[in-house]
Amino acid sequence: MSKRFTYYGGIQTSLLPYLTAYWTADNIATDVHVNNLGGAYISPNYNTGINGEAFDFASGTQIRYVDVPDNDLLSFTDGTNDVPFTISMWTYYYSFSSTGNWLINRRDSTSSPNLEFQLLYSTNNSAIAFIKYSQSVNTNRVQTLSSVVPSLSTWEMWTITSDGSKFGEKIYRNGVDVTGAASEVGTYVKMNNTNSTTKFGQPGFSLGNLSLKHRGMIDEVAIFNGTELTQLQIQDLYNGGVGKFYPNI
Image (cartoon, rainbow, N blue to C red):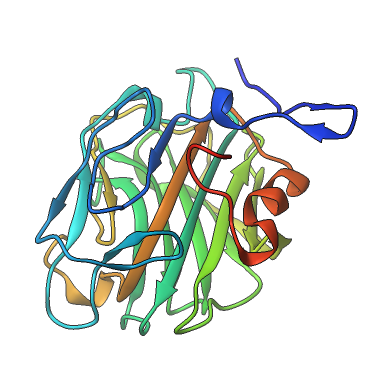
């Protein structure tokens, strides 16, 4: 059942009841929330983040990524339809990779069966791209782009929300709606719940490909499965650039 955040008398209630998973990256790669969805940092490297430490994937030839085991709570479907969701994270870019910077993805293969979604900076589109795959088929997908390019050498909070419909995704930078064009390839119906793992910093389908690595840092990753945050809620989480962080969200 999808949930929506509630205001009482103009006072915002806690996000914690709606939170599915949270990675603080404070010298730990595991989900710190009650669901404890895990996570292992391959060739770990941490650096100063927006809050405490951050996953630092570096700008050179190192292959580093966070690997989170498969869990149904990280699939945005109820088996019949897509469900609302929110992904929020703070990102820092040293540079853009030649093909793109993969941020988070559930796509362990280039074709069926393990394709769900991926969030990346697309060099070809000069935009953040969220791509979801219909029934694990690469040729049936919907892509939503941002209307702006991420900044280099600065922390920004990027948030993807969805109401569960075919073109229901929105993209926010620092609490501002920067949703751009959305397009469909083939026929999109819904995502499948696959056996794919969830990766940060590198695509699951091409772990050794330097043209796809995130050349930068990721911090404070929050996933809300079943909840589409509103812009006001996202702005509150951004908190004027200071941020609000687990467990005080």
